[in-house]
Image (cartoon, rainbow, N blue to C red):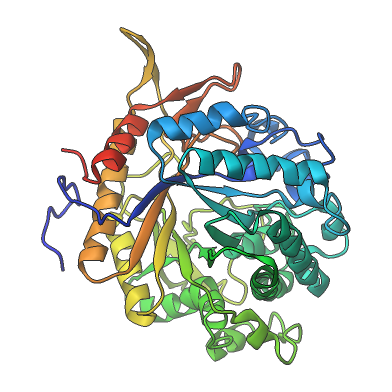
Length: 477
């Protein structure tokens, strides 16, 4: 174990010259312009306009209006010194119904974005899917339908043909765990279904979509990018005598059901056994696991908090502190008898525990299991209840809690590097306050504040702190 402060509040740690500092966003959360220039509706347009699904009835119709403020937002990234920018491409901007020829206006927008990043010396990291499935595909079954995986590969090909000489890293999917289990199992995310069998079918078809998309990209891309996927792998702490069994089950559903097939080992037998009463897995066809296991150059890791689990005794009130909204369905098909214990604080405004040791543990564990696979932290950050005050030169947001959170997690990343982990970079979530899915505009993750009345951007103290970290490559004192 690396020596340092037990609370991870280290300073003066220097990152390698090749380490890439950046920030991340997602299309539906920031772009707005949902019905402009040929964009079709996505499942999140439908979901957010359904009463009772999103806090306060908020929608992404306008969001941060990034679609109309592209140039000034690019200048903001440059002012902060970002070395990379992880953004997502809205599938319904490229193919309004998820199929057919590319929408020229949609491609042109992302071409302007990529060219603007390159002109400012910022590396483009493009995510093809960050949850905004074209609504027309959902009406045919969405991710429960194998045809969606095939349509995704064609979408990837269209984008690759246009941008495949410039993008530095292609990420196929962001957090397929959320798309499958929150979208089709618990009902907390679009499309809002509550069916465990459909959630597991979605797991497989998302995995398949990744493999098919990587293969399609490799056929058309002309530069030498990295190919990747981003997973929100769960850091699971067992509790008590039944904790090991509970952790095995949740690790299977949360982590191994993605990692194993993606990296060539097929679906875990214990997960198939655990879910036998939910589905027979007949949606996995011969040859699918070979299609899924396309070689990748980088694994994206999103990390925010940990979970603590044990088996439920069946009689006492069941703890369900897994960090996600309860919308009536199950996030854990086949393992409803696992309970998630409330963890010690402190917490972010999302109610998530703050535990930087979890990030170090996760990175080291991945490295020990897959030693030849480079890693990148593709999301890490925190929502807090920011306060705007008046300073001598105008309004300021002195978000010391977020600075402390980032300091501690960058320390964890540095310790992982010191322990031999091939960690290539770190993308802070998020560049700007934005539409936080089911929580609407009530949660602010940004290092840049957005005034939702005026849409004015205001870099917070955390943005200045991060700019100093990037400039010096050293965690500030």
